[in-house]
Amino acid sequence: MNNRINTKKSFIYFFIIFIITNLLFLGIWFKFGVQSSIKQGYNQLEKEIQNDIIDNVEKNIENNNQINISKLFNQISTKYDLFLIVKDSNNNIIFNNTTNISQIEYLMPYIISIDNKTYIVSVGKANEINTVYITKKFMTFETLFTIAITVLALLFANEILLKPISLTINDIKNYKFGIKPKKRKISNEIDYIQNEFVDLTYSLEKEQEEQNRIISAISHDIKTPLTAIIGYSDLLKNKKLKKDEKNKLIEKIYFKAINIKDIVSDFDDYLLSNKDRTYNYISISLKEFFNKIKYEYKDDLKEKSINFEIINKCKTKYITIDIGKFNRIFSNLISNSIRYVDKNGKIIINCYDDEENIYFKVIDNGKGVDNENLNKIFNPLFTTDKSRKISGLGLSIAKEIIKMHKGCIKAYNNEENGLTIEFFIKKGLDTN
Image (cartoon, rainbow, N blue to C red):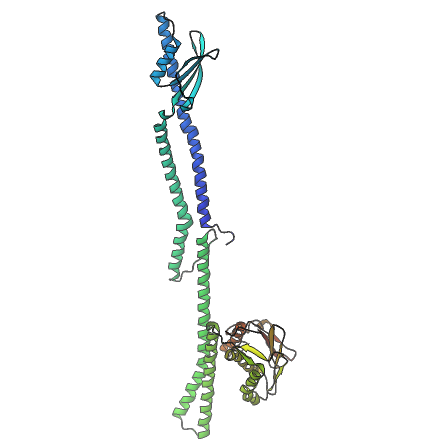
């Protein structure tokens, strides 16, 4: 946007140029139109006056009459409706019929010789003599000039506004039929809007691709256990089985159903973490929260003989959190560790604080993550486990919840070749 031309400024510049150009053309018109017309008229008048004087002089010579200078110039001034000031060679006024020189539009002095005597004649006309003629010429010129500028303004407006708008409208219409719009070089606001529209289409397509990817992942993950459930149900329905065999099939169906439920729950949590921004922050005892975590995963940890330890060095007794969502963070992290920690492994939670933040570490000695994938594991649907694409939602959900608690999360491999997830949240969140 730094290099674009502001449309409003463009029109301001255009009208400034229009005014300057108009004044320039008016000056040129006055110089070469008005003044040249006046000069041409006076040149013609000068010739006629000279011819009249010569004719009168010749007639007086033929009739042997003495030339009356005052009478001669009085006749000429009356005939041509002129103001005349006639001076002899000594600069004495011989004839003068002017009353107010300020009313005279133009004085044109020239030298004339009569009866071997030299006279300086200044000829003038009243201001109103050429007013109508000059006004007509001015109006004609100004009308033609205004028409020309209006045409240029329309062409300018079409090029700067109407044409880009039409192109953008066509791009919007064509996008409905799958034709992608293209960006333009930014020169005004319309081009900027076009580029914003292009970015919006890219975002929509990217979001659509993400939605399709999620749907595909869910479909893939649900299809596998659902197929097994159908197979086990068919065995129960069509075969005579012993009681223990039926119980085993029922148990398998149950766990596959739980598997599907977990997949759907993960997806629901993912949608809520991205769309439902309503968080209910309350103050809770940190010790009470950790005791709840221990109780919730007691059976799962005992089943795999995993050593689970919480080391709380936090000086803060109470933390401000959304309990349900914050519990989901540890649910995802601990479940993820349990999945990859071998029997008799260990999971440790460390907690400490400083003046601003409360820090948590979830450490396991299970399988780590390749270094090139460490920054990707918080992306939706990313997983190193190719058999379950949907498993990548858990860490993405945790990251979003931590973000809403004004915190940040990161992952790295630890010295025991396991994975450490470290995050913090801000103290004193607004509980209103």
